[in-house]
Image (tube, rainbow, N blue to C red; front, side):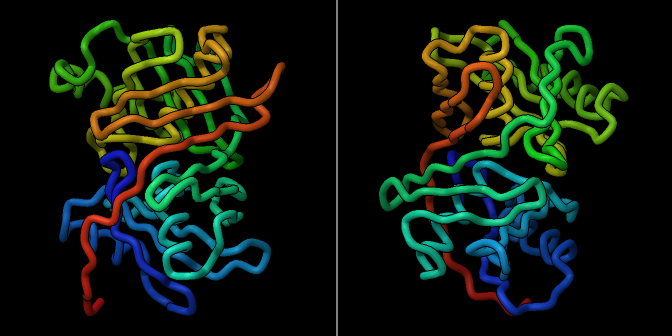
Length: 254
């Protein structure tokens, strides 16, 4: 599956015992996927979202992955059009908007520091939070991404971010619009989209007073995502909406 180009190997793991880290590395290598998503059992939610990066590291949360697994769980009959599922970063609420379009409430920021390293902000969504570095860049991000790779890679490992960080550069293109480019932790390269990265960018713009009507249309290399913030003095709800796609169905002996 993919969500705005952010692609995943997805399967139903309820009742299965396996080494998810090794499985993630093997399955992602088959199609050069960004990560692995699996539906697991959960006592206090509709299901658990199990998420691993392509290098076998466990991820706290993934916004586009959350939208994809919401569709997958609906398609296999685990949930209806509204759901709540468990992630390492906390519970996530999801909604089916149409056959292919899904919305999730991302974990709200537990850290929102506009000046963690010079002009680079630091955001953690959830607790434990998904770490994001967010920085404004006036270059044409998509045309110039190869020239930005080493700079963004260095930020990903910068000591200012003890857990490492997904690095998001943004360029404002309108009062409610921005281009967003993400160098993703665990993938260790650019990805076509990062839902939590766009959410973190929206939070930074909101904190700076630059997010008109609390809404952001984020253009990423893989498509377009819509972010909405609800709250006056703090981020009370952070919504991510966008497309999901089933690219291929495989039958594998793992």
